[in-house]
Image (cartoon, rainbow, N blue to C red; front, top):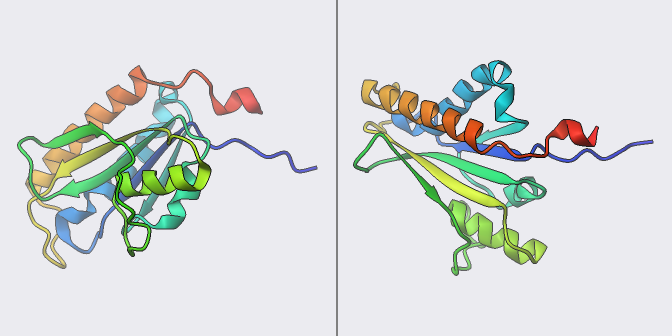
Amino acid sequence: MNIPTLPAPTLIIGYGNPSRGDDALGPGLLEEIARLLPQHPEWGAIELLTDFQLQIEFVLDLAGRQRIVFVDAAASGAGPFAFTPLAASRENTAATHALTPDALLTVFCNHYGCAPPLSFLLAIRGHDFELGAPLSDAARHNLQAARDMLGRWLTQTSPTLSQAAYA
């Protein structure tokens, strides 16, 4: 008999193009989290997804989560990163090829008929987005600062229900 498993309560989606310099910050942060995850059981169960851009199909990955963090590079910003709460938007953007996080949350609401999970955008400041460019030194510094903050946040806000509770 197949017993369905619940998804990890935390989903982190990193998106960006690794071939465009600092646009790789989203996927780069997920690589860092994946490397650190075995050393941090206090973070709870986490699923990591990465892609070049958000797609409408990701709405299926949002279901059953307690918290979601979208991670992307930002072309502007005062600090090394910004961590902001998200809400579903009023715009109907489901017809576009790529979606913003708030548009994806709107699709979630429309599809499931309920509010989306608690969601945040972690926008990491990038500087060089040229095709073929490596990650800039400034972006590496910002990535480390964002990684450290996210680790603290994961520890402080770890969901009370773990995947093991459903095994």
